[in-house]
Length: 268
Image 1 (cartoon, rainbow, N blue to C red):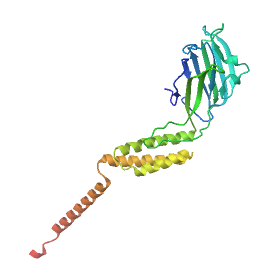
Image 2 (cartoon, rainbow, N blue to C red; image 1 turned 45 degrees about the vertical axis):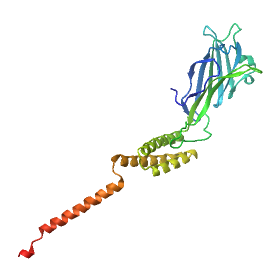
Image 3 (cartoon, rainbow, N blue to C red; image 1 turned 180 degrees about the horizontal axis):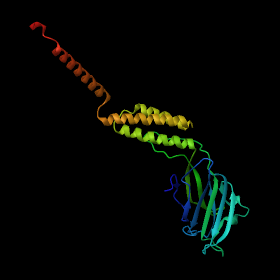
Image 4 (cartoon, rainbow, N blue to C red; image 1 turned 60 degrees about the horizontal axis):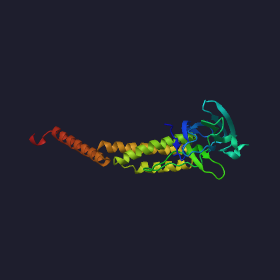
């Protein structure tokens, strides 16, 4: 797998033969995403179209290479900015894929390099809810026929982004969530753990990651204690009752023993 990679369904029959997409990266880190396209002229049978793309990376440079049937590079285009399209180049034909030329492309290699953007909003799912880590659009590619023509999505890729602090907090929340759910499913009383978990989620959303770690740790420890007590098979009230009974029996034993040790004054 590429962890954190989400691939949308293709509306176009242009194939992605190779891909190199980060599974996740830290905010501000410079990354490179690259894909290779082939089956360029099949279903829909477009003999001429342009490569278009977008990304949420920052400080972006695109490099697009056109390769013929022999494997030779016939053209290379470099573009700066988050959008790759006809308006981003001096000559729109630079981005065209054309089957009717002597140097018609058999493959198109698209590479985009940029800095991982900041996270706009931090969220974390509640107990029993589904949720994905924060992500951004690493690369989206489109088959563009130009003005008046159709534009078909080729594919899009999303990657996880985080800060060191947010990743640590999310891992703590993951551990707490798993333990609280396990204890609850076992029938343990996890009310205290659930309260701390909810507070940890709120701290995470507010980007107070240190507090989120502390509260998530408290939630996990509380849930684990409740689970251990549940799995022992003796609720706390029964344990206390058993201790009282044992102490009472011990007191009776001591009393009987002392009575037997006293001399029988009535027989003297």
